[in-house]
Each structure stands twice: as structure tokens, then as C-alpha cells.
Image 1: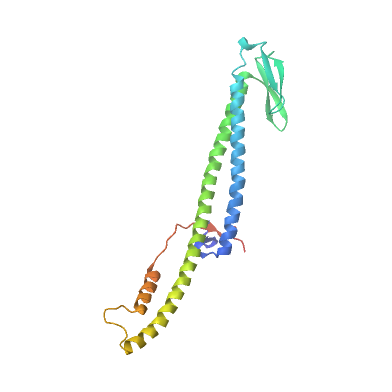
Image 2 (image 1 turned 60 degrees about the vertical axis):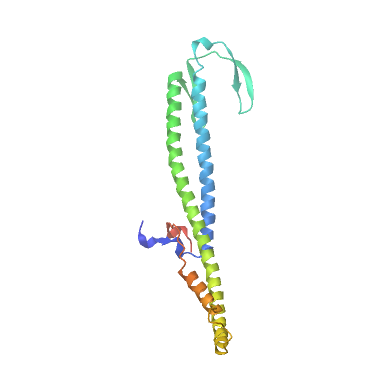
Length: 210
């Protein structure tokens, strides 16, 4: 990725950051839904492999419950323990022997596990980016608040400085007393010297929008 197409979060306005936050939240929701779907599919294939374990000669002729839907079953009898019909996708079924069916389930579980792990990394990266955006938004709002306080303190110092000059001229301010203007000035300098840091991420320009 070219550096000229990248931008630091600190260079964005609060409005741009809020738009980016909304975008990341939507993407995170979609990715989470996809992740859940992959995990559910992986569980179904694992359960199917477990069911294949019961297809043994000793169970031939036994009564079973045949699932028509996820919540509806009908009674039946096990008449074949050598072959099964395997759903290979898009509504197609292929007859396989038990060992072939087990191998098919193993491959599906491994494939889904690989995709789940990859998607998990994407999710973690997206969460990290979202947290960084939120941190920068909070930082910018704190800085704006501090800037307002600094302006107020500076105004108070200027006013109090002129007032203290009059008090000194009239000998109304004791020698051991720190004048209010000095205190205000110290507060201003303390605030100006305060440094706030945050971990930033660099994002593609294309994600920011116009």
C-alpha cells in the first residue's frame, strides 16, 4: 500500500471519524454473522460424522428417528448400514459408503476450520481498528475540552494580572501572598505542558470517503 494513499487517524475530523466508526461497526456485524454461520456449519458436519459411527452391522434393523426438519422427526428402521446419501451442495446428493462419507465430513470440517481461523483474524483486526477510532475520537474531544479550558484560564489570567497590578500599586497585596494572576498563569502552563498520547493506526484513504 502506497504511503501517499494512507492517512493517520489524528488527521481526520470528528465527523470523518464517526463515519469510519459506523462503517467499521457495520463490517464487524457482517463478519460476526459470517463467522457464526461457519461455526454452525462446522458443527453440523461434525455431528454428521458422529451419526455415521452408528452405522454398524449390529444396528441393522433397529428403530430410528429420521429427521425431516430441524425439529420434526418420523419413526423408521435402519435397513442399510453400508451406504448413505451425502449432500454435496446446491441440492445434489451422492451415494457414498460409510468410510467415504466420513472422509467427506473430515474434509468439510477441516475446510471450514481453516476459513473460520482466517475470518477470526480479520475480526480481531477489525475490532482493533474500531477501538483505535473510538480512542482517537475520545482523545480529540478531550483535547477540544482542554483547549476551551486553556482559553478560559488565559482570559482569567489576563484579567487578574491587570487587577493585581492595581493592588500592588496601592499596597493592598501582602508580600507573602501569591497573587491570583500567578496562580492562573501556572495553571495555564501546566495545562499547556500536559501531553496526551494514543496508539494510532494508519488506514487507506479509500476507507475515509470524500
